[in-house]
Length: 204
Image (tube, rainbow, N blue to C red; front, top):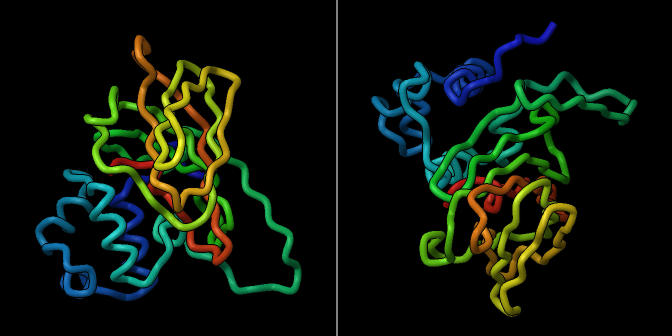
């Protein structure tokens, strides 16, 4: 049976170290993140910014999906896969611009990374630099309204029931639409080389 408690970043890091037989010091040397910081994360006293998560995945040569997934059993001939996503069991990445809950995170080497995402930034100025990631991105607005800013198009407001599909190599950002206090979207990022993309799902 699955634990009723959602996985934490600390728990995921401990599992990552265990399956690679790394000490905390070795992980610090590999990732470039101070040992004291990693220790606080593993004890759930500290989280990482999205930039540090990207740094961690790049230094360890892992996709973000692999970083947040459970160990995968040995490969079999049958390739069919299934995952049931529950919000209460989903890893959470919190940040300045977004709160993202990664859905079906236990599946590794996914071509798509789905996430339930709450938008925080109220303007492009507050958001900061536009995000650019390889691949494509789909966003469906569940509630509220968001303004989609892109590098080559005028801003567009998307309301509940509306969606966007973009080339995510193009600079882009999702912020709260004027007059809207909260918004939640289903965001799905994908790319051809199976490198999961979370730039639009977590804080910049």
